[in-house]
Amino acid sequence: MNLSLDTYTAQSQLAKYCRDGIAVDLLGLTPNRLSQYRRLVFNIIKDNIENAFPIAYKYLPAEIWEELVYDFFSIHPCQNYQVWKLPKEFVDFVIDNNYAKKHEIHYLTDLLNFEWAEMELYNMADKPYNYGSFEGDIINDKIKFNPEFILLPLEFPIHIYPPTIATEKKGNYFVLLFREKESGKIQFVDLSVWYSFLIEQVSQNDLTINQILNYAPQLFSNISIDELKTNTILFIKSMITKKFVIAIE
Image 1 (tube, rainbow, N blue to C red):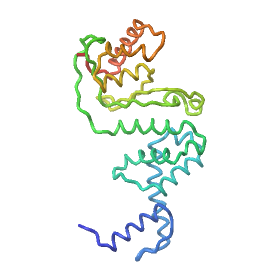
Image 2 (image 1 turned 90 degrees about the vertical axis):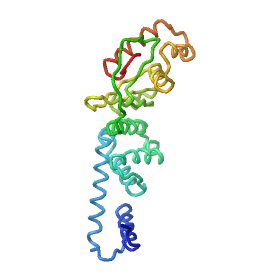
Image 3 (image 1 turned 60 degrees about the vertical axis):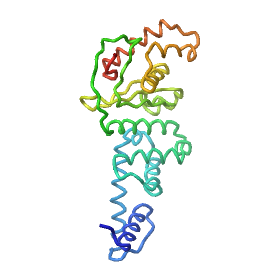
Image 4 (image 1 turned 90 degrees about the horizontal axis):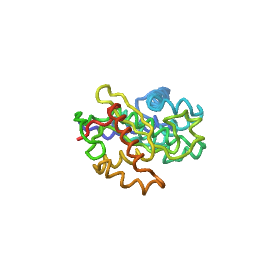
C-alpha cells in the first residue's frame, strides 16, 4: 500500500532528524522523545559497525572511532536495506573522506578492507561446487580452486601483526581469504607475490602452472625456474590440505 504524502514526509523528517540531530517539528510527536529515537537508532548503527570491525574498534583511539561512526551516521546516505552490508558503506565512507590521512592512521584502509572481506565471505551466497580428483599432474593439468575466496592486496601486514606493529612494515603484501565448505569458517593464508599471481592467473585465465611459469622471468630477475617449480608444487599440495584446491584434472 502506498503511503500518503503526509506520512511519507513525516517519516522522512524523522529519519533525517535521527541522522543529523537538527530539531524538527512533527505533528503528534512528543518533543522530548525525539532525542530518544535518535539515541536508539544511533546505538543500533554503532553496535553494527563495532561488531563488524572488532580489530579497528580495539586499536583506534576512542575519540577517532567515535568521530568515524558519528560522521558516517550523520552524513552518509545509506543505500543498503540488508543490515549486514552496511559495514561496506562504512569502509567506502572512511576511504572516500580520507580519514586515514587526516588522522595519520596509515593502516586504517587495509584493516577495514580486511575485516570487511572476512564478513563478506562469511555472509555471501553459496557458490555450489564439489571436490574432484587430485590424481592429475600439478604442473600440466588444470587446477580448480574453491570459488568462495577473495585475494586481497595490502600495504601493511595487518593479517600477520597487530596494527601498531604492522604500520611500521609498509610494503607489498597479499592475503588469501576463503570459506571452508563444511564449517563455513574463514581461512587466511599469507601469500608471496608469486603465489598471488598464480592464483589470479588460474582463477581468471584458467592457465596451468606450466603456462604460468613462463611469466616468471618477467616478474623476477635471476630466478631458478626449477626451484620455483618445486616450491610451487609444495604450495599447491599445502592448498589441497587446506581445501582451497578442490581438484587437479
